[in-house]
Image (tube, rainbow, N blue to C red):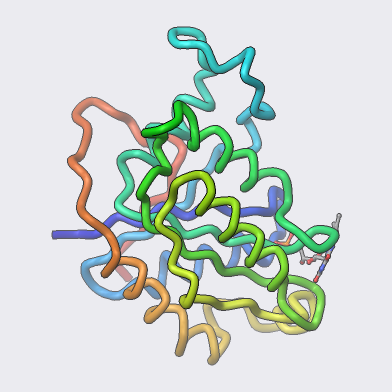
Length: 201
Ligand SMILES: Cc1cc2nc3c(=O)[nH]c(=O)nc-3n(C[C@H](O)[C@H](O)[C@H](O)COP(=O)(O)O)c2cc1C
């Protein structure tokens, strides 16, 4: 049985190194794991309880909830912005934390990784993402971490998928996340328009 990991990328820019790191996860996933990148985080409005009404939830937020609910585990791949988590992944955590209890992120295994410009690779953001995901109800794997420093210089010529340390470490990060996951039933009729599914290489 394939374990389906949904990757939420914390940077929305086209040339994002975190996006490239998530793409490396798609390519380097060990056999039996499938990594999907959620493609539509930018369309999800800021969480607002006035918008979160049964029957009237914005379709982009509902789609995110459904994608998270149907994934076996979540991989958050994020840079650090001003010492903490950027708004896109925090917003995704907020939307999927509700309704409470029983939001889509509830009891979902979560690993946080990423790369940033600074020398600590965004470790503060990664710690904060773990904290807020845990408060939201996720099952966070605190001891599985990968914070890659100096993103712009490190990946200027060598993309993450060709980086020796990432090739060595990322598969075991994904394997650890998968081992914490319980397969979720596949919801019939749900179209995954917002995800990139890994292709066999
Ligand atoms: C608003 C903003 C705040 C930032 N704050 C930090 C920071 O606190 N720590 C850090 O290491 N890098 C910081 N950076 C640099 C980013 O980590 C770097 O631009 C990184 O490549 C962004 O990720 P991306 O390539 O996936 O877009 C910041 C960048 C921006 C745009």
